[in-house]
Image (cartoon, rainbow, N blue to C red; front, side):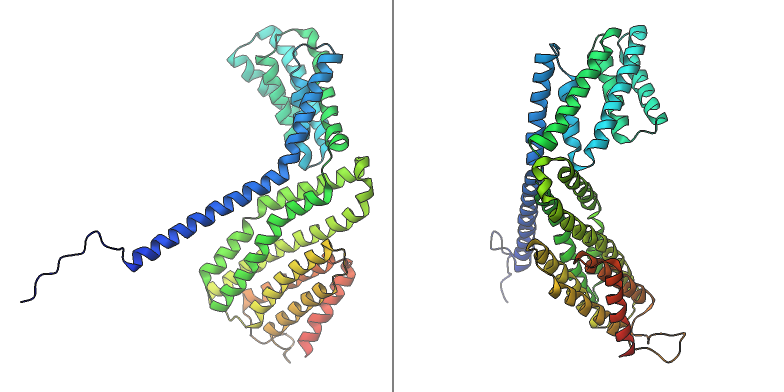
Length: 404
């Protein structure tokens, strides 16, 4: 009779447990690397912003203390930092909003605090009234925030003395002007470098997501297509930052004398980035429709994922050509080849005019093909073509596919 076998204890882990531990370890390392890359990108992007804020705060404090005789400058450096922090958008507009917000906060605070005194409920009432006045003036977010914040300062940090309103406004105005001068004259951002750093974390993940989508279509992997769609949708906040960065870069070359010579090159660069950015919204629509294709079991001709790969590669090729300031002929040809493949995926023209294509694509696939052509049109405009030229090329390529 065979001896009873005792379970192994303290031995090596099973292959399945080892594989699971390896996956967990790999995932942890990838998350750490991703976190480090993200923080390094943010440091490169906002490092100069921190220097600008520090210089502006120091200059504002020094000017107000030394030349305006204010022994405790508060509003000047605060407003200066607020102006610099608004550098990823339209600084002139935000400067005006911030200064108007300061005026409102000062006016409401200095009007009410001598009567009500300082306290918890008084602070709340002053903030509510300051923001209500800002809303009635149709102010934006910066105006509302500054009005409420200044009211809090007046209600809690400053004594309720009515005759200090003018010096306070002067302090805030000096701080705002110094912040604007530092951002535009003393330490201006590098426009093209800033736009490049903002575009990279948008375009790189979008290109990777489109390649993943093509792979998911080949494998009919619904989960993979949904992940690609989620990755494209997750770029919304980065697209917002990119829009603000483009506006800031254009403002710098318009107002900063040190950057005037970069106006022509930046104009072409920002136009290209804006058109590539617009094409990403079409990519999101393509991913949404093709995810529906897999969910509904519609056909996926082999030309469709090939076209998606080509379109994603053309964006990378276009970026390299724009950086080198070369004519992006190869990228244009690749975009048009992708359009041809989409036409083949749709199928040849049918004799029945009510059915322009055979049923190689289903309902969602046909809509995705239209979004694909929209994206191709935007990318051709990013390559330097005007809207009419890009539309004519896409139309001619699509029509040739229908009649081949």
